[in-house]
Amino acid sequence: MANLKWKTPRSKTRSRRAANWKLNPVTTVDCPQCKQAKRPHFVCQFCGFYDGRQVVQVKDPHAGHDHG
Ligand SMILES: [Zn+2]
Picture 1 (cartoon, protein in one colour):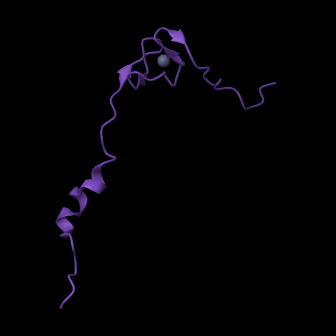
Picture 2 (cartoon, rainbow, N blue to C red; picture 1 turned 180 degrees about the vertical axis):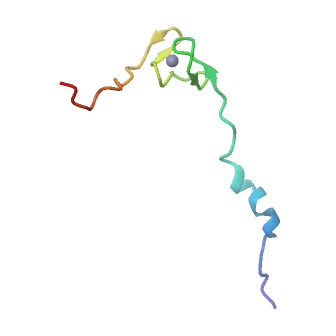
Picture 3 (cartoon, rainbow, N blue to C red; picture 1 turned 30 degrees about the horizontal axis):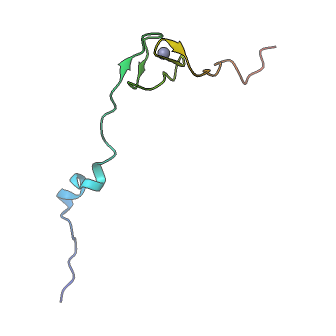
């Protein structure tokens, strides 16, 4: 019995379920604190605010270098 050269037609390769499950669009909302786009119901990664209060300490952008 001859082997199939392709199990999936090349035209269908990109539309297979496994090839697309990661490509869901990320929903974002504007952070009320810093106005950056952030995930809804997630702590803002830019200012660390959630529900109007600081819940995580955001790393100082100047930390790590020597400014004296
Ligand atoms: Zn923010």
